[in-house]
Length: 488
Image (cartoon, rainbow, N blue to C red; front, side, top):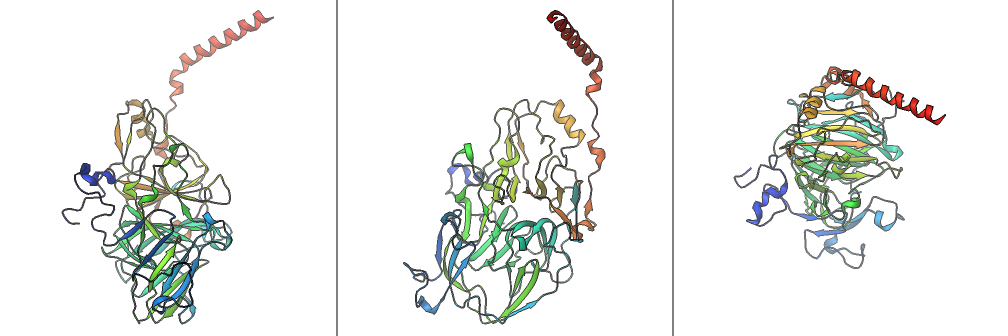
């Protein structure tokens, strides 16, 4: 980063970069080389050559420059207008111009069927955790080849479910593109930036930012900073949307204006490319004699996007008690159960805690959600020292969890100050109403470890007040007997 580039991992919030209005406000990180369009779920349009997009119709008899019109539809044609997802692309050659498909070998470290009948997945009633997975140092491993599946639920052919992956890459995708025909990827780089080329344009995604590449959208990943590691939440049968704010009103959490979409960018290259498709968890490949990123112009509402997590507007209690963790939700994806989301993406970023007379760490709890946590950078209180950036942990629904006894003692015995929580750190949670199973890869990994249950050996404090309690109970019994006698 240059001298004028803030250290984004150490700022408390994006607002700190604005220097109290002494400089013009800027919406991008200083080292981001691209331009974007702002908004969430808007209808966008972009053209690299002005005057390309036809107006008043989508598919004219002849598109300017001899381009081909191609629609990408991500919803049923008859879906309600507010749910209808599609984009029109005007490209040098249509996507159908390729040399045919061939099967690719299965990646033994990935999984798509998480039904318990699959012998390659495992149920766990206990809490699990993984140290950071190593990025390969030998051989060239790109984003596709470096995918490792940790956990998930359902099956993509059932059109409802999700998978959680890590990617471990040391090489850019050279003349290679990827299409996820199963679902949407929410990508969280943890080490190293991702320079992503999509059919709609380019996205530069750094640790502390996320991007969403949706089902069917071609993309290719370059590694400008060298080896890269990160997390992926993949969802099937649903799309991400902003959570409802309810009584919060119009603003807060992730604001729609902070989501950034690419602008049209195209390349005309007559060279050999390979496009890898993932369908039902299996990989297929087609070769073609031209660059697949040849879209000169486009318009629509089905567009990849990115978001800077340092812009998240935290909300919380300003009197007593904790608000439930739904206040940390950045994006959500609906399931067929209107009261239970398929997937939530939550972050725990720097914020103030000012609640009075309140036990500050997360309260001990059991809840229906499956929880998968990761750490992008910094430290996250309430977890063991083994919870490191690039690592992860998992708790299935209704498994009790909370902080260690020592932290409970400290938090209970001291008056909580007004304090900043999670300085210079961002942790996240992939949360779902569905039960997860764990893959063979993760189950047999040498990075897997379980929390030492001795950290939760709590004292019985009630028994220390045995005499006092017996006096209170005796007085209660005596009063009840006296009341009964008077009643007769």
